[in-house]
Image (cartoon, rainbow, N blue to C red; front, side, top):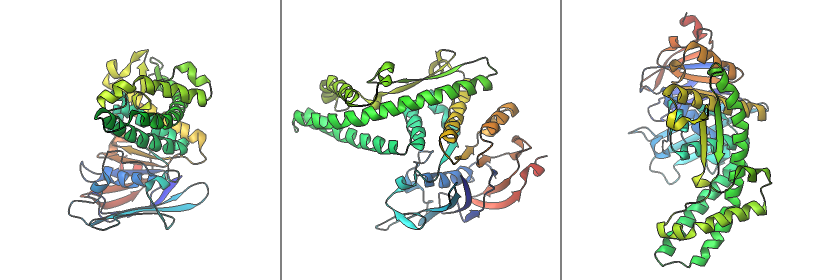
Length: 382
């Protein structure tokens, strides 16, 4: 899969950027706060995923602006497709999302169309951050392989919101406790499916991460990922996900129901899962060095891309946001070897920090505008 055309205007500080990307390498150059990352983000939101920077949709339109648009054309193994996301202020229908000219109800319809993977400096939070960061990484990566997973995640989130509201009502004496079983039965089915899908993905990514980390560490260190379910034991996942699993999940919710009612929130289930990341058998979060944490996060993202390549006819588009300049030459070569068959967009304040043999197109960004476009950028860095 490649992006063949991009047209972005009014997204944050970006103004009138239109270009035909190189099918291989695209280097976006500019000083800090000029709009390099905004350009990647404007394309990323067309994948149906939330902003990788945590931006809210209301912040997509630049300060003082009235509208924004992000449009791309993509070419997959079957055909060319067009995706458009437009927003305006002060209207009854501020969003207009279209796929091949057909209006969509939301970005969810785009999730199975434009596939991309972003590497950003904050990816280290996958390793050193909260359990929620790791759960979100696994959920999004697994959803790219099987978009049905998104439906289960969204349904579970809706059920949890209802359950927590119900718990508060019971705590305050405004709601009959018997209603809780209705929601717990629904939560048990969705939660069990999510647990099994997380377990399956961790098994896949753990094997690849181990191999890649041994390579990047020169064979001196081992990386291991372990899924720690709040409900199921590792051996439980050897059995199929069915009525027995649903009942086990339901019993777990029932065990904590009294405490949940006293606190007004849910303390069991997939919202309490953890993904343990170890280097040489020791917690990377608690004891890993800064270099080890960066390498582990990088390897996990590379493994995500490799798994996607194995399962899909189309390679994902890769966004590298200010991460390559921090890597030495050997690690840059390691990264580019993994993503060599994918279209890549790279942001950097200094193109000379990149490998000289990287050939493609360069786009200079200043003040949110494209000021210069060049071909065969390696010639300008030699």
